[in-house]
Length: 247
Image (cartoon, rainbow, N blue to C red; front, side):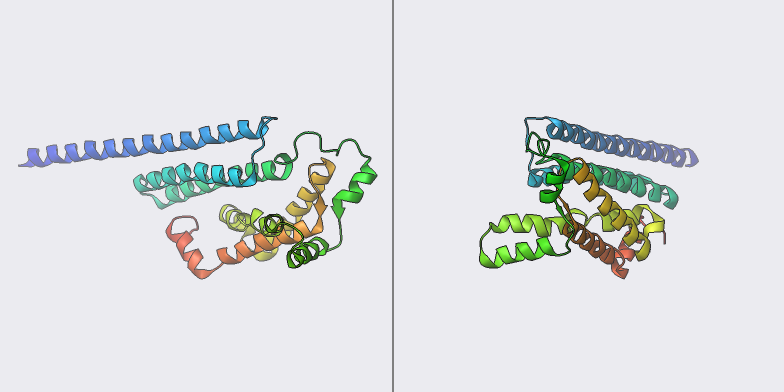
């Protein structure tokens, strides 16, 4: 009887070890799929004769994130220690954050800014004249008037206003999840303002975009709105339950 129980225990352990191994291999495969998709996206973005629209980029981003989510779920199912589960989640969120930053770089500095658009043929004074706005709400009010008058395509207005709000929305979720010192609003707000101002200045210096204070306002609204959602009690409980935040 004792030998039979012992054999059954060994067989069960072997079976469990196989399941764990299969899940680890499957997680590795899904991570590899994401890595290959990132490589493919990088080639598409860097290829000089290829123009990838923002909508296509977002679809690719979703396609890349899905395998990461599946791989994370598989790893969590075989890890018992809470500390290791936190490590798995933080590693996955950090990977998504890095990828998101790459997407931002592509949108802000690469997509729609390739080739000769005349930026390199004018003086810096002339370029600043047409590509810098330091008057708050000037651009926002202008687009609002265009929308009311119907003198411009609505999709352009949505892309420039709502798009700027949503562009940095993930920052309000990802940053406090990864960095504990950014879980207080004042620190988060200062970090975001510094980052947004730096981005606008860099776009101007590299002549890859317009330096517009309204962009900073809209980007900041998006990030702060997401941070407000992140701070909700129900969201905090959910993040604790899925091992993103310590209980």
